[in-house]
Length: 146
Image 1 (tube, one colour):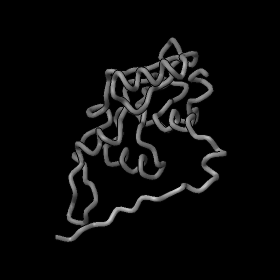
Image 2 (cartoon, helix red, strand yellow; image 1 turned 180 degrees about the vertical axis):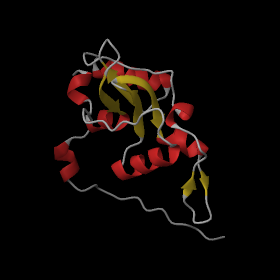
Image 3 (cartoon, helix red, strand yellow; image 1 turned 60 degrees about the vertical axis):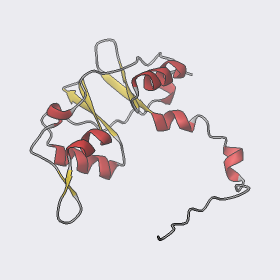
Image 4 (cartoon, helix red, strand yellow; image 1 turned 45 degrees about the horizontal axis):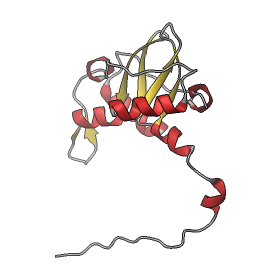
């Protein structure tokens, strides 16, 4: 299987000047953990949920507040990308080797055409027949007050 068959093609992106507070809002509303940063059609970087967590501080209401920084100031610029023709094995290898949760899929000219996430790869392991059956046991964690 190739990256083009697995990738998300309707990728939400931000531009380099987007404030971190807005990036956080977009990630939460879209329920995504990675946002590519585009300048025009060109991929310039990527922001992860973890990147934002490193910059946010809880406010008095328990919500995260962000310093006056933009996507360009926080985004990862050392990008690990693949082409649409890359195999799933190659994409997984990139993720494991570089300890990243998403690989942007780009055309040879640098134009973003999709994104493969660790969740996309995990979905390949789901056996629909097996998930229809109930589990033979369940785990319950109990908190012990000391």
